[in-house]
Length: 410
Image (cartoon, rainbow, N blue to C red; front, side, top):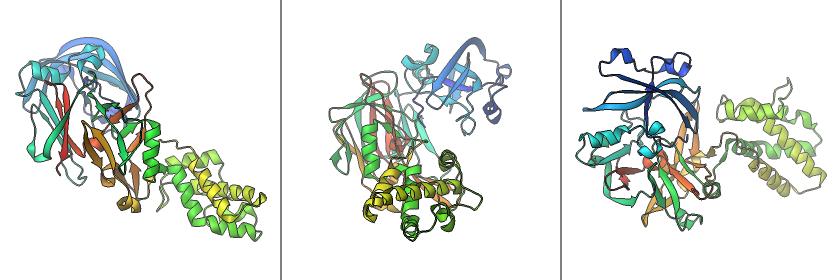
């Protein structure tokens, strides 16, 4: 999920009555606060995956043992259906600069500094990769927790205020340059983004190099691998094409689904044991493969050329959900992906850039790299989200306008 930092603090309001998402989260009740001041100016925030709207209010805000006085924040009265409906968080505390604060509201972190609540003008972030732990991570306002990193931090300057924007150099795939960022690329360091987002031309290189494919392409190839030769032999022996996929058990006898419905199921239905997609989608893939083989047979192609062509067609299928998947059994053989930051190398191992997602009876492995294209002059642009930040303890140095990275400790 791409949700670049906005600097505002917002929480659901007790006045949020017509958004289902609000009823599933804790809400702010102005009438119960003795320090509340009404502002009432309406506002709206657009994220990459949803939008919210509400109005500005003023109150004291407690963060840990710190009480920040007269903090401007947004009471949300309408939340987009997704992703906030399924979100485990109630609100968002933006940590960017005032330059990107909606309504030019003073960010909470800036008020912490101005009111003298912190001894150092820094905050630091550690994300716990141990999913079995109750502790998801730690943010320290005004200091560092030495237990959560090893060695020294490498610091690079903030190149543009607003987001925490820095510059990265070349990105290496198994020590080989991917080319585009040799002379530097603008990069946003953002804990509000789940994955690592970057230019399509590099992300495509990386995902191809680690064997990652869209779920539709991956499952299409799986059907080719498991059933392709059997389908070929049956076609050669004269079995009617329309019943082949029934014979191999991928389609039922009550007729097949149309292709668009099958592909929709491929990304929405996750019910078949051992597969990340549904039964209808597997039937659709099978029928497509039978058709493709028939076309190639009419052209009198050899078996080797036919299946090379069929696999290429699988690769070219659309990827509606944008994410790419790898075979979980291949993780030990995958290469490192390395970012150059401040003339230092920051490698990510497969265990760090691959996300393992439990899907009922199976585990799905998702690439941590997604395409995100920003045209010049602002782009090409990278967003280093939690996939990167969970590998490297990060210091946001507000006083010296720089960002530092050190190897995260477990």
